[in-house]
Length: 179
Length: 354
Image 1 (tube, chains in turn purple, green):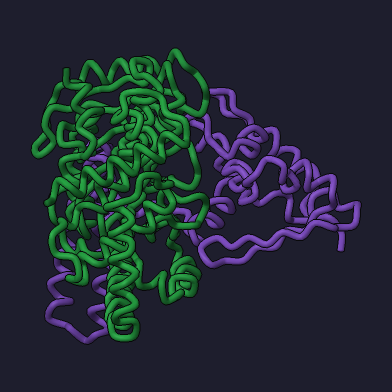
Image 2 (tube, chains in turn purple, green):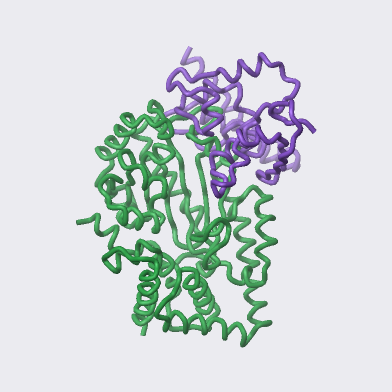
């Protein structure tokens, strides 16, 4: 088996991690393992940094064109100056704008850390206000409607349908207002 | 001086109130990670910007009150002695890494110590709320209110798709970490805990020992928390954790009945020996103290020991940590001296109940 990182040497270090019950295996040669911090046992426990770094989908796509990789790795946040390489090494963003700067690389990472999820469905700050809240409510109602129809609870479903209609109208009005 | 209140008053007032299922769940905690939109994250090391965050928090929130949380006080790491910081760490009001942030770190702590907002830890704000017993939903509601209160004045870093933006990718989305501290002596005694932990991990939750090194739990205290923060609503995260905790509670209850039946006098012997050790020893290491405290607490819960209040485990687990002992001794102690002081403190505390 060849090393996943340099794809040159024989992989001699095999590392298995379980995140949220999902097993990932990493196979590296000794040099790469050392560089990625897997061999650093003298430092007692593996630091959280190294653990985090290991969650990154590093160069696993063996067939990926080299140019795309280089391009991805040259990303830099235009606000705080953090490069994608630094982010990968530290496992931490430098500022809120880094999320935009590294956007193209984030989905695989989030999927790995958050059991396949990439989109926030929780709380929204009040100041973001109106339409986003309504949009979320609409999504929830539509899911509820589907369930009710499935359960053949048609009376309740009709009510939910009316609520959806009303919400859609409100959303449309707000959009027209903005335009 | 009210800073001394935090430090000298060793036990957070909320710890002494009774909570739901508190024979097994000692406390519930909610933490929300939040950042200022326009300021680099604490991980960036831009200290000038971070000091501004700290000054802003002081100016806006120091000495303010919000509903149940009266008289927030902003405590700067810079103003604390090392031992004072360690006391705050041992009370779980701040994290060890905040304690190291001398120039930028601070904590905004409510008078009852139920709410502690760490400033410039890994994120600009870490809103933490503690409740006694199994009270996750209540804790979440209160944390959300507190969050709204801060949000009235702070523009948070938020993205429609990614949610609340945090310096670590493991917190993005809700920024929510919900956890409970559980006392699981019977599951540990019957070795069931070793089978249970991998099962809980498979559900996307994390179990770890508290106060112990690594995963070894001192005093059979375990913390269970969610790991995922993205793609689930706050309410769902808390509900999922609650349903698992509920099952663990039931398992622990069954295991307690089982050991009562099966071990009988042996169990009683173990509990009263531990009681005897705590009441009489002159030198006691923290590990032994934790084990004995766990036994005694189990004895209280099983009705075998009647003259000691339940909260003694929570209280003494905190009080017998190194920094508290030094506070009690009013000087720096060598590890050997600590063991003597620990034994003294426990004996005196038990005497108080006579």
